[in-house]
Amino acid sequence: MIRVNRRDFLAASAVALGGCATRTGAAKRKPALRVRIDAPNEKLVARTFSILKDRVEYRCGAPVIAVQSRADLILALDDQLPEESFRFDEVGRALRVSAGSPRGLLYGVGKLLRTSSYEEGPLGLSAWRGTSTPRGTVRGMYFASHFHNWYHQASPAEIARYMEDLALWGANAVMVIFPMINLQSWDDPQAGPAMDLVRQYARTARELGLQFATGLNNAFFIGAPKEFRATPLPDPLKRRGNSGHPICPSIPEGHAYIMENTRLLYEKLSDVGLDILVLWPYDEGGCACANCAPWGSNGYLRISRDQVELGRKYFPKMKSVLSTWMYDTPEEGEWQGLRDYMPQDGAWIDYILADAHEDFPRYPLDSGVPGKRPLLNFPEISMWGNWPWGGSGANVLPDRFQRLWDQVKPVVEGGFPYSEGIYEDMHKAIVLQFYWDRDRAALDTLKEYIAYEFGITEPELVDATLAVIVMLEEASSNNYQKKPVDAGQAQRAAELAESINAKVPAWARNSWRWEILYLRTIIDRERFAGAGLDSPAAEAAMLRLVELYHCELETDDPYHHRVRPPLKRAVDRQGRK
Ligand SMILES: [Zn+2]
Image 1 (tube, helix red, strand yellow):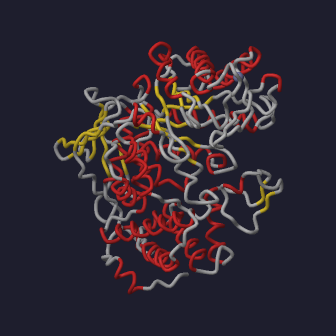
Image 2: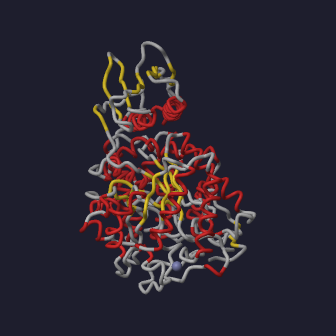
Image 3: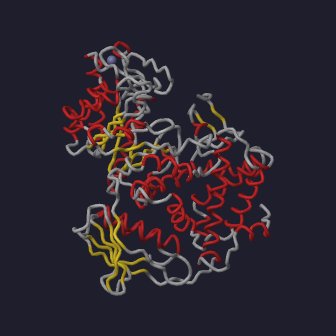
């Protein structure tokens, strides 16, 4: 155990005694929360009620019961409200949460949960009043389900619960990709399990009223015939990549191969549904032959259109997102080509997505979005600031994401953050709330997160938690950029976290969200101010992370070390890539 320097702690945050009911264990039984449901008996309404019941009972043990009269809370549908909006008002003594649809009700319940109080006494229902409508129409999350990371390893029940949690923060779309890049063909022994996983995500998302998205490009299986492979990109700036096994769609047999495999993918998703198809130009994909170049405004648009039109035969309402990732890198007229294309031929494109490795592309900021389509982004919320990803616990960079968002918020209205696991859960909440309300500050979202997920509401303790987060962001930013890390500050962050840990309610202390933040402070202290990552304290913390992420200590996956805490004892039987 770490000895808390009590004087330092009191100076940093004078925390009042008293507080959460479950802290001392022997909590008094709370009165029930009586909920009346003024909404049709739809599956998603019932699911929303069960999510509310589960989250409240988990936090404070107050039973949540459905009633016909004398309600404390009314959940209602109101078709006067926009589909995803919700409103909080009062009817007699009851708080009423109304929404334009069952999905809107889920967002309303998210707000209700985050702004209610679970401390001693009766459940303190939210004091928030008003109407809330999301600005962005695609508030997605991309789960990169590979490398035996959490998305790859978690049980269906864990995945469902995690998706519920993201929906409560305002998500309305989830993207998962079938990893052809790692497979020989449809007959590969791994193809079946990989497709089962994609289908499981699709089913889970759609049960929650979330849109399911997948991605396609011109890169297919490892075993694709060599005769019609794409011409590799010159990629003089080394930014586009030549990953995967791309096919040239200008060669008729190549086109046929792409369309046949696209068709098979749709077929395998036909019963679970597909709401959004995201087309991607580079990294995996691209062709530099004379007939396809410049890829982004030529071959790419032709094959993407064919893939979308075929998709709409299976899924008539399917939306399309055309990514422009790494367009004009270097300049070859791709953005201008897309602008010229849109008025005549662009009707099949519903959204345009833009992003880059570093700064957001200038073209849509300076010249507007071609075809005036809604602009989505693809923020990288996982990899920056930590290696291995999640390997030292929570990745918390609220300042970075506020800064990046401020550059694009006048034009970007939604997107698909790139996620490698649960360790950057705070980033997800921050970005989803940016998409909901572009002017909502990351700090404001964090305060709501700290109250709801850590049960921390006393102002001094909130400030102490924020102070820990600020110190962790500074440490990881400096470390990642190979600048010196302040050892004394790493020590102080760990001490502060230790003292907060003693004060959070038991339910929060036992939740992975608090635990990954707390473990991060221990690992940072050991690596920046202590004996290093081999110390017993760091080892124990990393082992616990291994458990939480469902990592493999011995693995055959040559990429698993990217998502596993860097334990010396870990074994990579196939080596590392
Ligand atoms: Zn080509």
